[in-house]
Image (cartoon, rainbow, N blue to C red; front, side, top):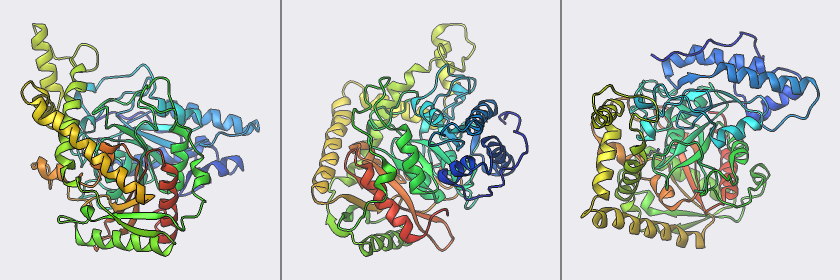
Length: 494
Ligand code: GLN
């Protein structure tokens, strides 16, 4: 069990549940509550709810209360408050936080306390957010169910016998259970959108290069993205606006202007073209998911969007392509965990024994599987057959989207083939687990933005997600369509 810091004072903010970024900021400005009382409320909820959910790995109460105190001080002095003033936010434990333990869900980093902050976290704090703590995830973000965490599983708040999705399972569950107003996750092959869909919240993967990856513990560098979870599309837009934009510390972050995503939400959607690709509605798609997503597309048509068939013919190769590129990059990225520089170090008599035992004892089974797969795909003799081939197919998949986006503004699809599955259901079958990513990995391979927004429930009341894709750097249109749908479908705040 992981030690959590002392729980904050018991003052009550009086704001109740169902809070959004806007309601919080207004309540503080209008002096109806304080950031300190709110942080106290959220810690109390975490203490009450999280023992059964398991979303948090570490709380950083001292840091949160210091920040909340500063916001309250500003409010008392009448200083204009920044856009996320007092908003309780939590961070997936793959983003480093200065002075706050960061594990990546791995035993190998159990004692790792980073000396600096991830840019996205620093930007949230600079905008007034109160960072509550660090969230559980699959080890090094490898997984689709959060069951690969070296610490403990996360239970889906909507049905505790089920997984919350992964790898950002803690990030999705924390928002769904209102243990944070918004969270950050990372998405390499679906790890924001899939858990958002399973937990009934909004999850956004921005364009590759839109958000700095500085301070994100790398899994597969050409596929990794940071993005927000929130209860509403507007809150996701507010968080994205804060974390997006060029960062000199990440040379892959793009020099592309960041629009005011919140203003974009209000533009009309009438006349926009929504693409529908048959490749995302094939065999393996749960019938209730299909029905909910088709109804959502119908709703977009009622809002004045034009539904246009498009073709993404290389989709069937996406899973093998992803699992070669991602594992190859992971095998290289994870070489740095050798017991010398970070975290856990096994006791041994020789240096090579120390490396071997550190990595053997520090990494879990899935991480070892990925390192082996990736090392194999990159090895002499197999490189051309696997890695190089996968890179070529990646180009074809990207071209599929380029062609489709000549005809349409967004593409609508299911986020996942099924609703949340049971804990334990797929742990012994890695291939079945990998197939859960079938509709999400394509956006990572192409680098385009994608969002999952709740679009209904199945007969067991399990949430279903509608996924939307847009052109590179067109998160504005993506959010606008998602927002219009959310409003029309009245699924806000579920
Ligand atoms: N489920 C996918 C995997 O296991 C995606 C993970 C992710 O996006 N971080 O690789």
